[in-house]
Length: 313
Image 1 (cartoon, rainbow, N blue to C red):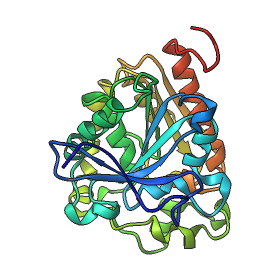
Image 2 (image 1 turned 90 degrees about the vertical axis):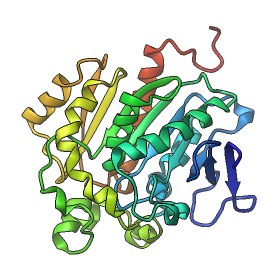
Image 3 (image 1 turned 60 degrees about the vertical axis):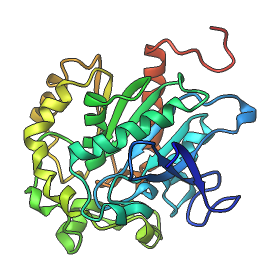
Image 4 (image 1 turned 135 degrees about the vertical axis):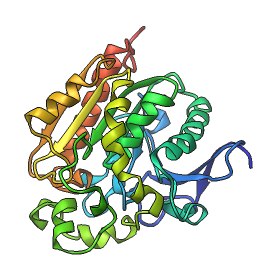
């Protein structure tokens, strides 16, 4: 299998994604399992990409989580491209078109070992490889993003932006993977459907996916490993907790643990998102959250001494 990025589908906007978003598959010479995803970037006529955002979805979702179709304002990929950034949303192992190759899924450690090399090749082959990378993770994907930053940081890593992930769970780990029932709806979506654009739950039928068994079984491992992972991250980190976040504790003591446990990170930001449930990138608050993601990335670029497009170095 040759290394690189393989586009999928015909020309134009493929069905079920925003205009300008295309489906891709990342392959490597040394890994037998490809990684699928969604890719969007700025018009080359307007200059090179400012930076690359690599987005990792949570458990029971897929890459489409970052390209919500219920309202044009919801898509992270479309917004990023308009702002001059490239956004790659990956289907983590056990999800997406190649889920059948890993039907049982992968543990956190195994996912880092799968994603790290594929991402390194993807970044290395880009013309703007030196532009910098932001790892963005939601829920279980937030754990993967932090672990990648700690153990397999991609070239030019600028920072990590995490939502729906903390250090102390508010519910037993065995609740993971239980997608049915009113209690699970409250955990994942919050107390009101009014937090989401009309049609969200119909549009999400193609985004929601079963949580693989090995991933489900490894959820509880984060309680013992999370603090160690966070302590080894050497780039700025931002945590966002939704107003109605119910999976994780995020009171003053928990926030102090996050900031105090990031000894090697030059900066740790903890943000709150009003009018949002756990799935922050699919609700009415998604645009506000995504704009804050790119504002944090701009701050990381400034801290790294990056030169804005059109300005002399």
